[in-house]
Length: 119
Image (cartoon, rainbow, N blue to C red; front, side):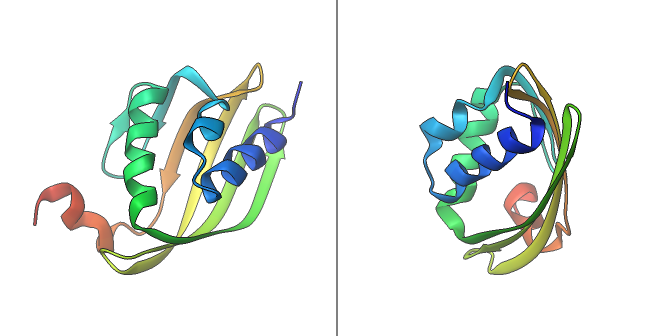
């Protein structure tokens, strides 16, 4: 069984390549994603949102992954086109049976607020 850190690294390796089917294999079907603007109740809903984000992503640069037991945290620099922004993102992940089951994301959302509020 892969460690939480390895699962998270492999997931983000696929995300960086924009290989959505490969990324999806690292997610539990009942994954819960808690974000700054929205919460996604399952892996498919999260993947749909991630796919949209990747359409405006210019660069995703992983700075570090820290793992202990069934938990892992990742810090990455995210650069997007519209809105044109670069922000540091921190995510905490819980992994069970080799799959990500829970994610909480934190970042400065001010540049992205209009995407979610319609402003």
